[in-house]
Amino acid sequence: MHPLPGVRGAGRGGEPPDEDMPLPQRPRSHGATAGPAHSSEAGSVGELTEDLTALPGAAGEQVEDLLAGWLRAGAAALSRLARGAVERMLARGLGPAAQLSLFTDAELAELADALAATTATADLLGRALVRDWWQRAEEGNEPGSGESGANTVESSAAERQSIPGPHPEPGSDPGTHRGTGARARHAQAPAARVGGNPGEPASSLLHEELARAPVRPLAPARALAYFRRLVPALAVDAAAFASDQLRRGLALAAATGRELLDRVREFLVGKTFHTGEISAEKILDAAGVTPASPGYAEMVVRTAALTAYHDGADEERRHPEVAPTFPAWQYLAKVRPTSRPWHAARNGNYYPAAVTFAQVRGEGPEDVCNCLCTFRPVPRDEWARLEAAGARFAEVSAAPTL
Image 1 (tube, one colour):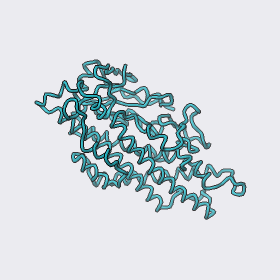
Image 2 (cartoon, helix red, strand yellow):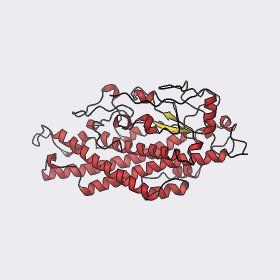
Image 3 (tube, helix red, strand yellow):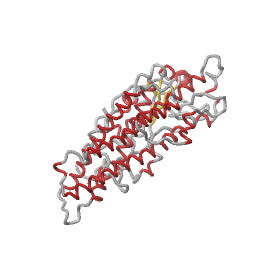
Image 4 (cartoon, helix red, strand yellow):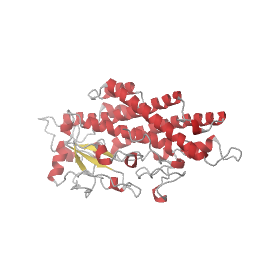
């Protein structure tokens, strides 16, 4: 089940919780947060473009650039539809009490299509990055190539930055991870070469095309055609994928319509038109769906996109053809004072391939909404060196109950 349907309390009053902060439990007043130390100061999507994921390096920058554009488009679409719905409600003099959703069927369908395009493209981006890395890793580790063991330490700084994952300078301590909550002495791990000649940056058609012409959110079938052109080996059933993405889009749109209607109802309590307390702008600001107060709109699109991105990457990573190349993966968190403590505690931990990212990070709104955490697959030659240096898999533990 998608983590967003039914969620409340995120971005009340248009002010979202920090990107990695546990959400308050269904607050009943506007502007409620978990306290000043935990509230986000970001007022617009433009201020969030550098904080969309913990993925570092050139690959992280590329993903963040794409997600920032998708976030702007998705939040703008939601804001536009919400404005039309609220203005229609006020023009007709209809109170929200009798409504089941803020949106009409046509508006819900438009929002569902926009969200499905965002999640489908994000899902396939995650899959394509993993499959692309797998292809290049396999090419660099072919028997007889003479490069499978020694080239990882000798790779250039530019090449390390072309690989998704944290990469220290050669010779730095890879760190160790032992048991629940174990932390690395350094959260960075040495990179594995993924193709190309020693000393040359790794590249691929996928990265070159994404850098040349960033893809916009596409309908599921078109998104799959786009990414399959760049990464033909993607293991996706076209019909099932399109159906699943459209179903998710409809569920998320319906939940968003219900949540926005609840926000409108709460804002109108005790207010009257003749005092000037009620206007479309004030309602939309309080709901968090205006450019000046975009918290809820951004949270919906951002969380949906990143959830889909990780779902796709994780599924591709665990594909039978890909899994042997990556026996481990590393949890990456953007650690800061407002981070969820249990997410920050996992930063740098390693987990076995059979364990999913969602199992470790958590799947409820308290773990997922606006979270920046991500992961990187660890190639088998790198994992062999890390194990030899003392690295161990961390235990999978549940997050504390709020």
